[in-house]
Length: 80
Image (tube, rainbow, N blue to C red; front, side, top):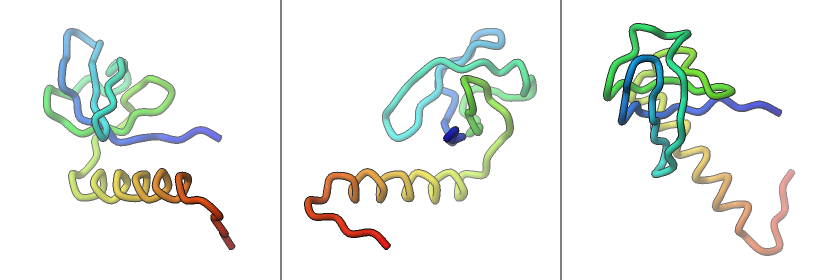
């Protein structure tokens, strides 16, 4: 399964960006989103920024990802 993740552009040179999501940083291309600028929140999929993201929506997604990680660390998990 593929997942698009919101991340903030923390470095930008040409169409090459370094993005940050929840303290994790990686490289991403902004070729598909030429209007993206330093500090913007973008949705990253397969190494490309594919859309601009609202701060509140990004925070909601980050919260859900944190809850999933927390659940994954829980012993004797039961899901339903």
